Image (tube, rainbow, N blue to C red; front, side, top):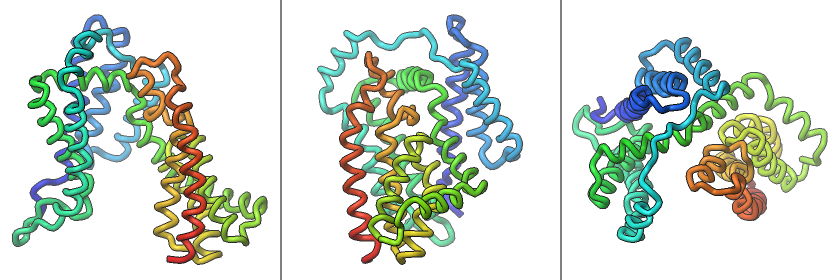
Length: 320
């Protein structure tokens, strides 16, 4: 029996979404009040429901979310945040201490992932060891939020207000990673990986280990650029190029294959507008004039890391 299940954090996230829906519903100046209320409310119910709701009902709910987003019914409200002058004044007062609470999230996540699963008294565990990393991440977010309250002197209502405003600014892109990850599973079930294997095997001399490694890493980056998410690309490219050629043909290490392959996919994430939640939303939140400014700054880094990944894959996957 676990004392701190993962569902607690899903319930907290769902409650936040429901809170955003209520806030939108009570805002008469909101340009798309009904559509945005329905989107955030339905997303909150799905997140709160978790395993309780029937899978078919969740599926229909996701379809409705996509329809609302496609119909441009999910837009931010007109209520403003603090003024630029106020933000500048508070940033000048807090300076680099602002990063302290943000760094608490990965710090707690790492420590918690290594320790929480080991805490046990008799038949009672603090957390499920298989979920320790996710629970530690949730705890890190909660602790960081409390630390930010103490640091800034704000009340909880201020974080709810600003958090809701940022969620509305991100909008439908918030659920894009989950949808694309699910799409990767659909591609795998549809046999896309077999088609990829046929194309790679006929076009490239994969009988050479270096070519097989390069094909997998570059394929992960390119497919991620098309899909916008490395999780969506992983199932198709690993099944189509990684497993048949790197692992089965050349006896490569599957653990190293997966780790370096995902990092190669993330290189593609840096270079595509399809990764809206990573590349387009930050430009919107920072109010940049060029919506592609984030991508332009990341392309050289993405190409450099991808090139390094090809050689790291070749030098390690066949030797360890």
